[in-house]
Image 1: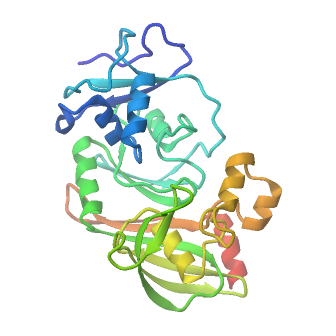
Image 2 (image 1 turned 180 degrees about the horizontal axis):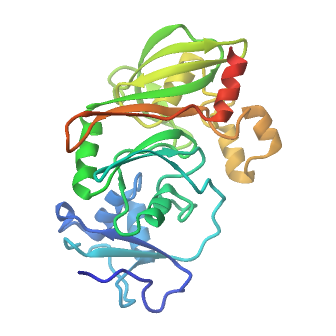
Image 3 (image 1 turned 30 degrees about the horizontal axis):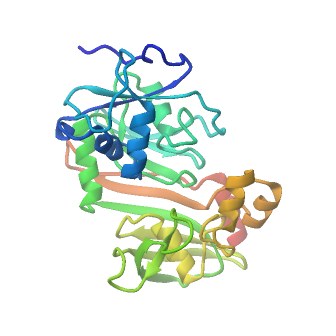
Length: 324
């Protein structure tokens, strides 16, 4: 049995240690390619920079981006201590057995470590609760989105669950509170692609054939003079799909810092100065009002349909009362 990784010799003992075991299927990859694969939305250039700055062996010697990783080894990234923004530090459990864990993620809790967050993430909280073998995510939600997150309790279960999402053997249901009064029902079928100009984190609608296919079906559950509660079923899983589709339709999600009536200006203000009282007033909520409400997926062992759901959070339910 291999030793538990620890902060390498010569590094600040308060450093943040990230560990990445190498599964068989990644054996032989360059180290920077491996890190790019294991950290979501990481460019090859940024992965190379991270390896040069942070990759160590257990004896304290540095690693090169061009090195090939071996199956079974544990890649170590060591980051200096950081002051992280506060986030929710608990989560609910919606379903659990020996193979699968389904959690209820609160809004504001990032799933993965980033340049800003490390311990204040769902990844870290799962490591604390399941120190011997932390469950692995089968999909992801944005930091401000709340609701259902499915995890595999082993690499095999993680792969099986990810395949279900990749091949669309799932049924996902979201709830959103939007500005305005959408039609009773509808289908949004617009291609999406990264914006040509502006913030690189944003997506936009493109003419047919010029982006990735994205389809969302919806129905309006309640509507009032200012807000409406909408139920959504994404047939595809593109980045920011529901947020972009609803904004394109003319009914942006309440609290959306990127795709609301002001465009990305609130997002830039938030990055510069945090969540000010003026920004909260303009956005109505400090988070966007999108909730991963329910999911049906085939259990990777029994093959039976597994259905889980998460109730609408209180702050969104308060807007729903306003909508009725």
